Image (cartoon, rainbow, N blue to C red; front, side, top):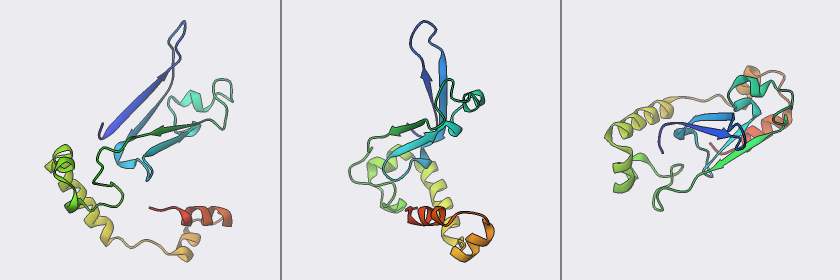
Length: 136
């Protein structure tokens, strides 16, 4: 599985009704190989507005993925250091796109904490601590 992905959750029973779906790009799988989707990340929109009739407000889905390669780590292995199996699976075009994105992000200067607080007024201090503790 690679790229844009859609997973559909179906209620098995008399109607086999679609409960909800999650759509994501595999590039956004977090460190730890999982996707976390709360009720607000689900589709269709009416599932988010059901006021707890179908799914509770604190509903969360975790989708855990297995490692594709035991040599390469998508969060620590540099693009040019990928093994031949990973390079073949990704393909030359994708690797070139990743290199372009990496070049852009390497040149980008991110705001420091003071600038971040100015850009996000009204955020509670606990949220800053939580955000700063996360590994990018």
